[in-house]
Image (cartoon, rainbow, N blue to C red; front, side, top):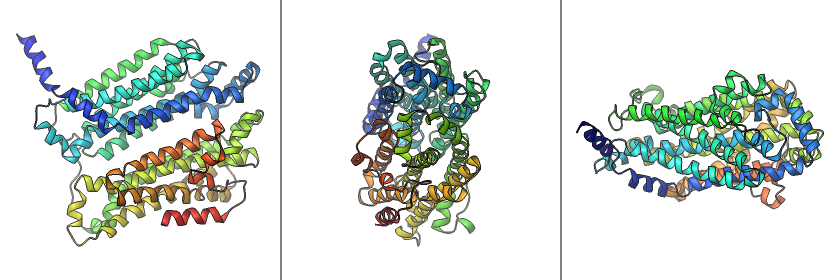
Length: 516
């Protein structure tokens, strides 16, 4: 009788899960497929790219030997455990594919848990026949569906390179995604803000990347304790296409089970809409007495986090410049790709230009997130009491837009300083190279503002624009796509600095487009 009561109580707490899962998948019918497609395309396109760069076994064996002595590049992409095309694919994109799966998963989970509570929709849903833990379960199942589809695509697409390795890589990428899905589920119980939940989980992902990078730079086989402390390090130790270590999958399963149990326990110990780390209340006076000051208060954490991240990224990439130039300098194919991304100049300048260009692409994600804070403030109802006072809509929006566009300039400036610190020279040219990315970044921000103003319901499509630009800039040069495709992105029209010549025409046009 007692066991029956326990089972009945558990079923009540999960009542409505299937309906909520279908609703979550319907809401994410665009976002999830785009994330999966971008990630899968990045992985599945890599074997052919590598085959063009390192077509012979001798060239691939030489690459492995060079990586063993290049700690800076190991910190960037990890150690390589084999010289087959499958092993090189897992080495080159495994960490980044796992990171993208983690970002996708945390966005899905936070959107269908804390976002729903913050907007008030969860209260309406909970008034029906819906169990206490149904929303959390549906969110985790939605993330599981997305990661499963991604794993199947990767495994099926790479089967021709070896079935076991393809399956291991697919499961490893999905495992990283689910680890951060359950981590996001825990953070969503701790915070009252969906934005803070996303930021904290992303910070955990950043810490995992740093731990793995530090461990990989210290040893050439990934045996450092720091690497084992990171789920991204577990993906390395799974060793797809290099005598797979299937037992590493138990680490993913154990972490998911443990974190899931903690999330369920926390969900059962709080009221709807509440959290274990409540937001500190305070009157909107003094420094919060204006709309601009309030916007700064809401976004200052994001500005600080992105600023620190870009500065550190600049230091890391600047420090590995010489090693990267030495590695690709002997390979004509790799040289062409780097020069295509960075311009037809010296290889060191081309590498610097390509890395700065990549940070510019990432800065486009920052400006979209910051601009869409306007959309979040409106949909959550927090903008209504502000606009009910003597604050016009343009004045209210201007506070957030100044932070979005000015913040983009700040993080690129700090990235330039980081490159100068890491590289140890060319401070002026490196700062100029970073700042010249701003017109293209501002164009993406302008698109987000336009969508928010003209089609508020479609404002989130700005993420699709930023994602498409990121995909073109990241994968396009490696796939040798036609110049017309690269020119679709505003970043394709920027001068390639350092090393190239400054072209004021495209910079002025892009700035004008952003303003319009």
